Length: 221
Image (cartoon, rainbow, N blue to C red; front, side, top):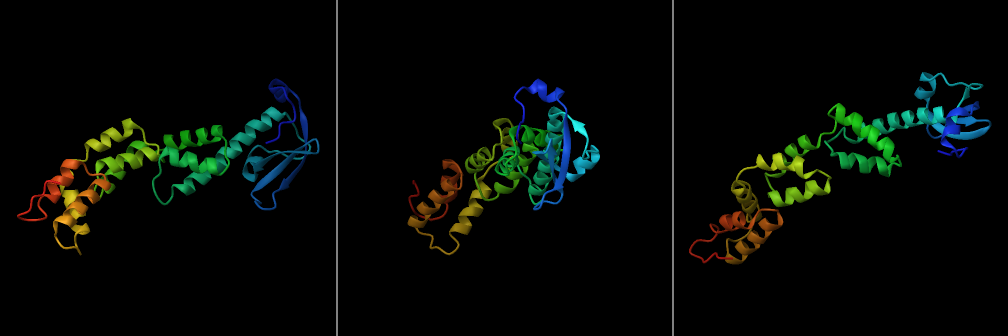
């Protein structure tokens, strides 16, 4: 948005005339607003109608800034809701998505506040569900690392990690799948051990699972 005057207080006092309201060519649901024959900002058509803005009206740039911020928040909220429609997302994922779309930090903050209030984004719930699903084929260490990259806080992850009990069963399932088409040799057992570590299982769990792969072998990896 282009600021036409330098002093913020003046923006709230000086009145300007709306000299034109033109629908945008590429986005007909948005309008370009002109003050004193100069382009000032873009607004959603619904916002223009709701505030009853029309050519000839006098309005201060400061007031139009407030309306524009409201309009952008509504548009950004719509984008964010579309983004989360297929799957849950963390606050950071939503914020990064809106930032890539060019929205300001203030607009993103307003959108996240609204989405949090209505439980559309909840990092604690996301973390619980992510652990529940991922723990079937990944270890805690890897899940923790992935959630951290997604912006989930330590506090939100703590409860979710507590709900994940012994990982031996999951590790055994992963190992069985890994070895399904392989011979049960010591070499493959060692490879399986390393594979389990790469999947985020701890050393003791990986060792416990691979110890039983080869009979009559020294499995001290």
